[in-house]
Length: 362
Ligand code: NAI
Ligand code: MG
Image (cartoon, rainbow, N blue to C red; front, side):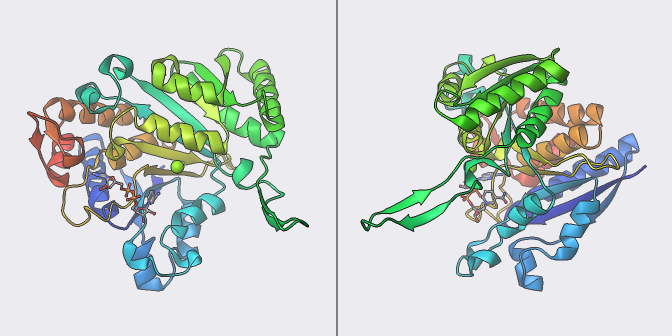
């Protein structure tokens, strides 16, 4: 049956890079006979301007009913003065919350043609292809007790608590093990069980689940501080890394810089499988709305296009088409076309639409 796809371009460069995805999707229709039931809506600053809210209930409902959501980016300095609950960024926070998107997948993949764009030595990152799975709705950002309190002696103290339940750990570990089976079949679970109770439970639950259901996958454990070091020293030792909210936040930002540019990196956030078999999922580039370059036609569309490729792979089961798109991006880079953010000597500088066009041609 035709897959329902909700497209939310958002603000700034969001609509500019989403236009290139539309061309890739149109090509799939024309040349592969694959069509989608696409609907598009406003979020972020564009929704604030039109409807007075960063996201309408109606759009959240559409997202619930869709087979997958392709999100651009939200944020516009024009709305910097409004209250916290009316900022454009609320749109993405609300979607994550309302759809229960608990697992954030961030691949860090280095294209051969861009090895030089990495901040690390080419021999360290060449061929790098890792995936970080970060738990996103639990852990220290949400655990109770939390707050700032005043002590009898007048000092104040700020409190956050890392809390993880067996259920929360199991469901995110399951995502990592399932992913690994489609990749290099190896998972590294990251915590700090040497100093944290929640880390101790994390390690125990992942170990148990592995023995029960995923014994065919190679499992290792690593302390988070060591993992940060290993990601810089020898990132290719990893396939899938699974970790909690705080460590995942830091390690995924670190890993993104192994590849060179923000404009290259897609992400996915997955929720729980429903009783009817559907699984809420949202795909988006890791970059924001880039107001500094918006409207100039120079944004790199690759992260948005690769987010679409991830969507095809993980939500629509279209491995072949996903591979085609990723290969087309690699081939296009091989021809030497570069947007400004990945420009290097001897390459040809192009804008968003020329690059999108070249990817479609490849
Ligand atoms: P940003 O990712 O928008 O931009 C950071 C820098 O990277 C800028 O210099 C920008 O020009 C460049 N850049 C980003 N994407 C690019 C691309 N595709 N091609 C070429 N260059 C690119 O992050 P920033 O500046 O911190 O935030 C701008 C706005 O975006 C803020 O309102 C922020 O809240 C929002 N934001 C939204 C996100 C989302 O929708 N999920 C994620 C991150 C930020
Ligand atoms: Mg972060």
